[in-house]
Image 1 (tube, helix red, strand yellow):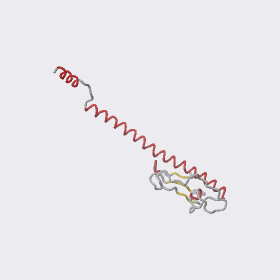
Image 2 (tube, one colour):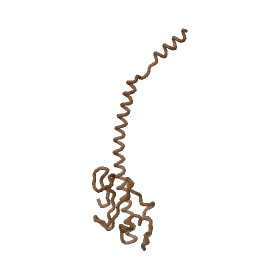
Image 3 (tube, helix red, strand yellow):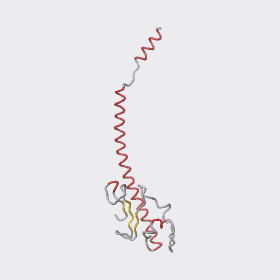
Length: 145
């Protein structure tokens, strides 16, 4: 009988967290998680925009190599695929890109026009919104600026 009373005393004297303390900790963790989420999602948009700029610069270099070999840029109908697949033009010594032409970071094809309205060719992505104009993530990325 004496042993049972000592066990009861030990179990009632154990320290632990109250429900309120646990709720406060969970609220603090939720606030921190929301702050990190907001910061992280902003970086995703910026990184996609930077990736599109980098891809357009790579296309620019490949288009210049194509022009040096052929004497002109691919037509709008030939498109950027002429950098990877021989369109049957004399002088083509590609491929000018190591892999197939990728879509922009928003999973849409890049827009290519030759001759372009801003130069010999226009190469651009409409950004996150997929339409002309916009700010931030929706800003257009192009080869002439």
